[in-house]
Image 1 (tube, rainbow, N blue to C red):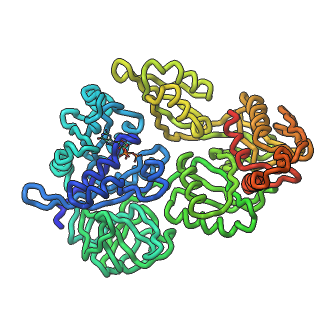
Image 2: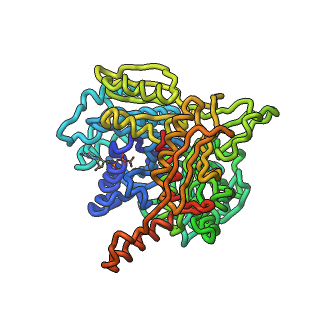
Image 3: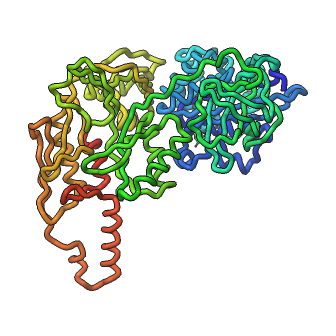
Length: 597
Ligand code: GTP
């Protein structure tokens, strides 16, 4: 296919503004899917995604479209919309020449609209603004157009108005893609250079490598070389997603598709690598990607230690498809053998955890998540720390640094005061306010990452009744007055409950944590003391009184089925408990330290 008839584009949007629906409409209009399939939100094929309505993994789908008597090939590269997945967004954008920027006709420009638009501008893409959901009973189309112009700096007269749901304006959208987005450059005769922008594991066919051809031509059967990994393989099958995998004979400049070589280990294919021909090699590889930064960590332990190997296999399987997830074995006195896992953010963590529970059938104890810290020791050494249990003695620490994020809020002007209060409570440093029209504003802060990852988003939503949005980016580490807060259960230190907190909030956190644990840990036959301590100093204490009655006692001995049910229920509860000395601590208690803010 001649490059002049190819267009590579992404759709970028704030979450829920209709990116997936628009993508499906494009497939529908080009005949790639049927109306019935359209209704099933075809591009999100991970179970978890469909359930949560978010797009996580980047996809690449080729669509043929007849326009003015010519057949154009439109390659749609999907991007995820959530802040946790910035990395995937920028990586997908590198494979395109243009992007549709979808904005909801009522909600208007939101924090991630801005963040994604900037990423596209940085990648030098042609951006076409699309105002979606014009069918809604109440819209603010004119104001939204103004926002597109004022906040993002795009010419709003170029904007296309559509209803992805009802299929209005879709042809205009495709026409704009063909007319405005530049055709890919690249010489089909040059030595092959193809960018690896994703890979996934298929249990039947091995690793499927997603590539975008930048220069040259890739043919079925070619002997190919991965330039960075320096591995040589055969392109046994090449093809495109239409949207199902469809084999073809060759891929030329500008085309996106897949390669199957028979490789079985996803780790052997690295995203950002360049594929060339073994026979005629390109002189140098394409610029790659920055590797993703894991910012949130937690421990995952099997409840039953027999499941350790099984859990390892499952984590390995997860990491095969997700380079941004990592895990290393760790041991804890209390929890035994398990793994410390790293994630891009909280949503990423929840998704992996859900997939493990669903697909793996391993009972898990998960510790409260924490961010990565950086320690400068008195010895001069600088070390990264991703487990609060590993904080060295305070005498050894010169600087205790935590990650700081630049946070941008877009919110109704009437909520500015409350959001500023929220940020002040969380050690935020005010940067500036910009008004975006009469009743909306953009507020910028620098905040410790630890203060935002857990519930900042929920708090913002409740303060602004859903109208506020936020986006953040980690900008570096800063020295702070941090301490390790230990928790002792019946005199025993439970490392998995340790937290790193700011000294100014440590007493409050300590009190709230033991109080919360008191609610979560069931009564035992004996008294259980709960203590919070910094170093040797105990700062809070609660006591769980001893249990007196048998749970089944209140069944009056009469109804045996009821009694059995009660015992079953108790057993079910036990599955998620872990024994510490004589005390059983349920899974929920490990996460409760988070809620003790
Ligand atoms: P993520 O994948 O989570 O980033 O969301 P998205 O941007 O892909 O949004 P999605 O396409 O899933 O749409 C979000 C919601 O908006 C869904 O409930 C859609 O049915 C609805 N929606 C999308 N387009 C339109 C439209 O044109 N009109 C109306 N009324 N609703 C729409």
